[in-house]
Image 1 (cartoon, helix red, strand yellow):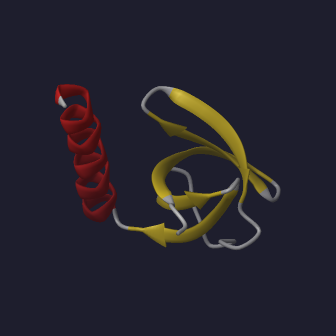
Image 2 (cartoon, helix red, strand yellow):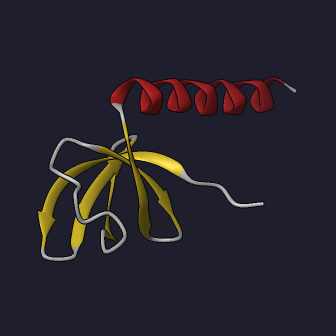
Length: 75
C-alpha cells in the first residue's frame, strides 16, 4: 500500500520545490508535476510531487489524517 500526503508548495527552483506540512518544510522533486505553481497543493510520495490537487481536497485529507492521529492517541 502506498501513501501520498498533501503538502503546499512554498517555492520553486528548477525541478525542485520547497513544500510545507504542519510547519515542516522539505525539498521535493516536481519533475512529475511541471505545471505546479507556488501556493498549489500537491500529493507527495517518496520525495516526488505526483499530482496537483485543489485546496479543498488537500484540507479535507489533512483533516482526516489529523483525526486518525487523534484517535490513535486515545486508544
